[in-house]
Length: 310
Image (cartoon, rainbow, N blue to C red; front, top):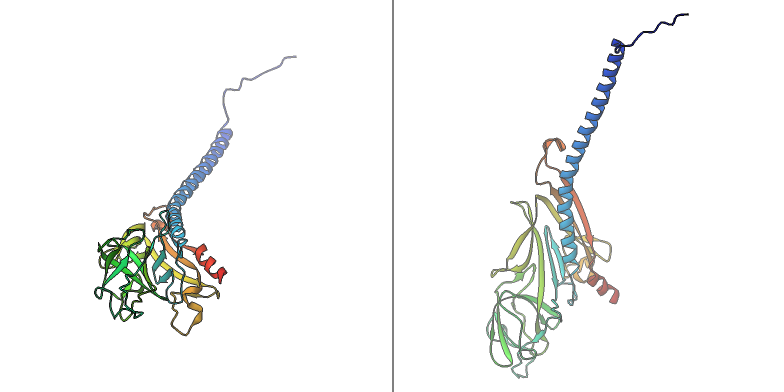
């Protein structure tokens, strides 16, 4: 018997069409997957820039707010931490490495318990005694003036040496510094029980025109904060105080009828910020910059310690 064989020289038209169809499906799927991955990556990149800015803001806020109340116990009318709208202020006593000295007022030896109205050398001038033969204060420093149970903040405009035991401070003539009472007004300085101590001040606020979050740790000669930019494209910035009663308030007050918002009842702070991406991507969010809300709750250990000690 003969066996006939044929040599196959190519593909049939049907096989070619099927192969081309399969190849087009594979290419289309791969292209679609690649495009989706590319868009996802760009979307993630834009959103990550916002998250990165928020993480930086959150870490900075946590570090600074945690300092509230170091070596300065809050009172109903004078707290170490405050919020007013979009402004945060935090006060603490510096350690370098020891606690900042407390300088007692100059005692002229008079038998009367208080000096006349005004300072010891003028309405914005007080003499104090050196500690260990010296003093560590200068113009621009913020100090806490303690007169019995009353507190005032003073922004020093000059500090001069008077003698081997005394130095003189002059301070800004204003009724308020960083949203707290300042100056002497009608306050009578006690010959015993009056002192000053240097304070650290941290302030955060939002510049509405430039949409920037600002931070300051110094004041200028007029008592205004000397700010540095912490974050750009901050569309909103809100802060509220948290109290032991579980309530929230935009600020504190120890002189109104509401006893749930006294300064010595503050245990923390809630901060919310809406941050926008600094650039837009046509492939992300319809080409519109991405905005996201962030929230932080911070409870300074020093304030908690105050409450637990009571």
